[in-house]
Length: 472
Image (tube, rainbow, N blue to C red; front, side, top):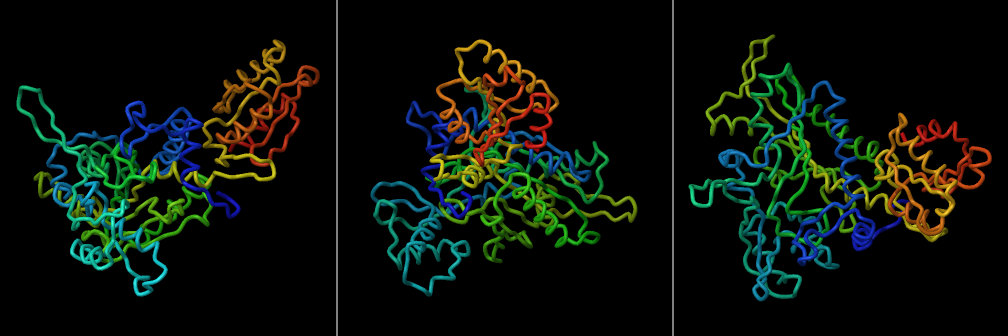
C-alpha cells in the first residue's frame, strides 16, 4: 500500500486465500464465523512476526523474562480480574432476523455515512454508556445492516465458558482465557522467587486468547481465537517516573512496527483514550492505530494499570504479592505498564502495508521486509527438463540451505520464467536465483530483485555474501 496506493480488504482476502496465507476455518463444512487458519505461507510469516517480537522485547532486554502460562486457569482467576462480571460489549439484536451486532459499531458506521449532522463531528462513541447508545439509536432511527429495527442494547459477556471433568462425574466450570495477562499476574510471586529479577522488570508472553466476539466481517482483525503478545512491566512508582516509562514503551512499540516490521509511519498514529473510555483502574491508555482498509483501528494498546491487578489477586487468593526493596526496606505492591498486541493484527497490517500494484509491469507484489518474508529466496533452474541445469540448481539450493545464512528457501521449476517471477512477487519473495546455461559456463547466476524487478549477475563464489548483505 505504498506510494499513496489504497487497497480494498477484498483484495487482501483474495490474495491471502489464493496464495496460502489465510484460509477460512472448516470451509468444507461452511466455515465458522470469525475463525481462520493460517496456510503454509501464512504460518511462516506469522512465526517470523512472533520471533521478531520475542527477540526485541524478551531476548534482547536484560530487564525482561518470558512466560508460557496455561489457556485453562482456575476460574477464580477471572473473577479476580473482573472478566466474569464486566468483560462485555454492548449487543443489539435485529428484531426481524435476530442477528446480533455491536451497538457501538452500528453507531460508528452510521456516523461515517453522514454528510450532515455537523453537531456530531466530535462525538466519541467509546464514551457512551448503554442508556446513551439506546437513546442515540432511537433518535436517529439507526437500523441493522439488513435495514431492520434493532433492540435496546444490553451487555454481552465475551468469556467462553466450558467445563472440565468426566461425563458422569462432577464437572467444574472453567473459562478459555480472554487475555494472557492474568497468567503473568498469578505467577508474579513465583517469577520473583525463581529468578534474580529486580524492579523495574517485565514479564512477557505469547499465547492463544479467546473472545466470543459479536462483530464479523473484518477478516482476521477480530476473531474468536487469536494469538496475543502481552507484557506486564512492574515498577516502584516512588522510584520510577511512570510517564517516562510509558513513553519509553511507546517508543519501543513504534520502533518495532516501523523498523522491525518495516511499516510505513504514514499509516500509523497514536490515540489517547478519553477519561470515560479507559478502564477505571487505568491512569492513562493509548492505542497505536493503523490505517486499515476499513479505517483507523487499534493495532496495539498500552495502559498504566497501577497496582490494580496484583491487589485483586491478593484479595481473592489470600497470597502475598508484595515486593520488598532490599536496599530501602520498603514493602509495596508494584505498579504495572501493559503493552498488549494481537499478532493477527500485526499480520494483517503487514499484508495491507506491503500490498503494491506495479502498473508499469502489470504485477502485484508484497513488499515484505526481506528478513520476515515467508520465503527469502526462490531457486529456479531455467528449464526443468535439462538434467545439468537441474543438478546445478539443486547443488546451489543445498549449499545456501546449509550455509551460515540459513535462509528460508523454495524451489520453483513450474511454467516459464516470467510466470515464476510473478508468482514469487505476489507471495513476497525478495530474491529469485536463476540457474541458466551461462551458469554452467562461467559460474555466475542471475539474482532478480522483487521490488525493482532488476537483475544482477553474480559470481557463485560471491553469492552468499551478496545475499547476506541484502537479507538483513
